[in-house]
Length: 310
Image (cartoon, rainbow, N blue to C red; front, side, top):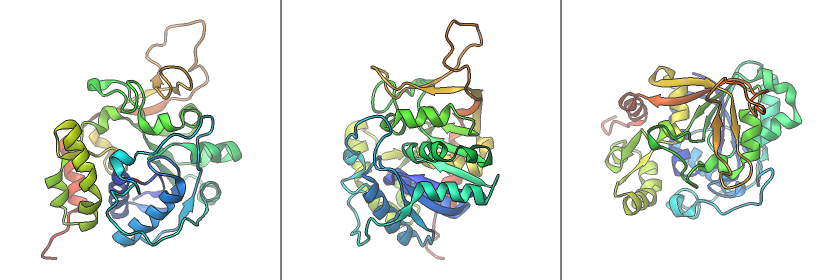
């Protein structure tokens, strides 16, 4: 069981990841960031969903916009106007203490013990290492859902090249992925390999997950002919729980910050000499490119399933 800070732009699949983390990890706090929804709504969602699953941890408000780009629209078509499928009344406010300060203070207070789980844009983490670069060697690991490299044909989900979390703030992502932080990246290459069905969700016997996923399932059925969802963000927790279920490569990473491939994640594919090497000063990171679908799915469902007779 890891000590984690859970960094999220909480939408539907983020909520599934949070529910999984609550069962399997020691969550020190939830830090929110813009992305699927505005950061204020993310604070409200974190408070609401934590109440619904009986999770009592502090919640913090993070960055509200990208580091180097104009803000773009949220993901209402997939996650609903409120990010949680417009399924629940939300009585909570947007007030919370500063997320970046919490990240810095917690990592300094527990050197070598804190894992950052990032399932939204990486703005909070980039801001933290800019303000306090001394925390970089103190972080145990940064486990990120983001990016796409084209394995099994899984490329971008916003543009042909770019995955949503990275595309929302490519400058922050480039800083984090090219830094000395020990990163594990869970890209679309593996997340698209682990779908669950509406029947799987309903079989968990968790009314809150059934309620918030209804709109997501309708969208998936209309767009893809599949009544289900992909466990994108949840695979960060799968990595913490069962890293042996994944196949990885080591590579330095960069993110494209301009042009028609804005937000594309790149890894170095060759050691051949070149005149200009944008990876020259980057650190080796861990990239998951293969996954045991059946084992990851079974572990997730078994952890969350509620026995109606219990």
